Image (tube, rainbow over all chains, first blue to last red; front, side, top):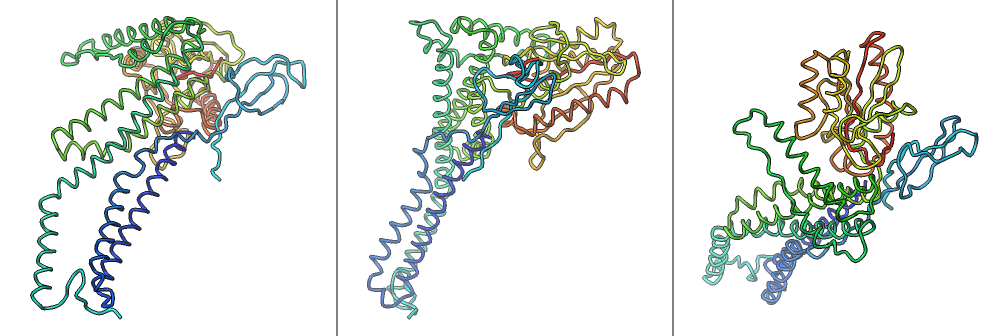
Length: 130
Length: 374
């Protein structure tokens, strides 16, 4: 359904920010470990500490502020079908919904027989995401 | 390569290392002990701020969409913006229930007043709208009002939490946000469905009734409700639904009451068909049978059906079709349309099994009949 499409999109965006935030935090952790345990790098421990802290702040910032301005509406991913039938024969046609359609609307003479055609059903089919 | 170093977290036994480690530990515990609650508040507050921004966006967008829908039926050179914006804050005060005697009568009176005000407002701002378009416009306004209300409530608790710096306010708000956001997104998408006049999931009951009464002459009974009579294996079946294809629910309780009283209470069974909320894990379009008045109104209509059924000792059968709130408010899904055929067959079978020849049966299709004619 369309609404679930919108919700799914925003959830996807949220999880993307969460993953970036976790990656940055892990990067910061790695820098701290390098600065502490790897002897040849101990001379640069201050630089590594500053870089690690910068990564932590970026991680924190993305976690808290990520998606704040993402106020777009992804359009509903659904296909609405109108099914046409006939009161006298087995006519069944499908077409896209158009404004003014409603279920049991009379559509005049049938294409196959002298009977009256009408709208048998209208329903939404969710579009599969590519 | 990897050895104990003298870098960031010194591991040696010299005085410098010990002091550095003590400083780190003091800093760590200071942050955890002194700023723990503040950090939690920041975290919850950020979630609430994000949700509020989203809700404001949805509320603003729904207002603009409503204006665009109404403009088609408004008079030229008339500014409807201020009128519509003001109307979105329209409210209803529920009757006092400290003395519950007659509360449903008073509630019905207030709901009738509200419906009348809505109709009057729509005819005032959209005089070119026909009956169907006017009914759909009422639904569009309802959705915009719901979104405005949700946004204002969430913003209220966000600002209250910030003002009082109360972690508990933020925690309670944060726990409810997933459901609130789901509901808000459903209302937003419902508004788009209403503006195009497509049938919605909640219209399942009306769809079933329409299928049963197809080809029969229809008569008006109660407000916005029509009924038709048909013969099914020598049983008289009276089918009723809200009058479509405009977006109305009518007063089916009043209609059932009037029909039963007109028939002198000689009704063998009442069948009620409605859409019902599904539990997580249940399938959309699942058809379930039970007993009782299957109607989700605020009370008065359900009460009338229960009251008249009790008075004349009429069994009430309920057939429901499962769907979630999003599916109930947006374009009807294929599974639900297919379920309507299953329900029609179930009703026919149940009438044959549970009633005898010559009996009178009432079938009430409950729900919003937008996009469903008869």
